[in-house]
Image (tube, rainbow, N blue to C red; front, top):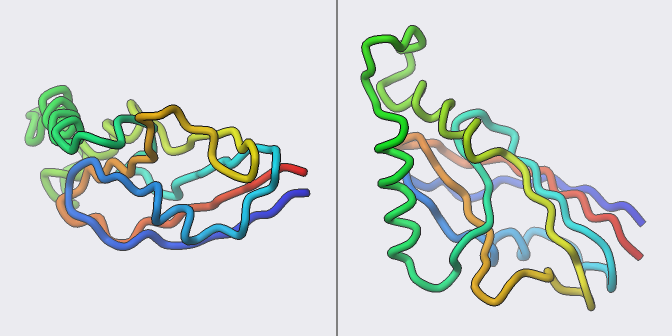
Length: 137
């Protein structure tokens, strides 16, 4: 069985956001065994797996990304879309736009403290499009 669906996440401001529940709300029931692949159709945000309990981790990761890739660097040529745009593209490349999660017993087989994150690197990124593909039996 292969199922594919596309949906839009609600808009968020800059930061790392726990979106596991929103992802699950947009999916059909999961198979007993399989994989879920999530692909973000954007170049200025990212998907990753990380801490699902302490929101301080999300704040710290946002600060780390902002320190690793700073705004308004004099060597940026792509500057017409705002000071946050070129750094957002670089951060997206560093973090990635897709993740794959095993499905076991009809549920995402995440670790105890893992959750799905949207890393929004623009100040106002708008709704972000996701392509979710489930392969299973």
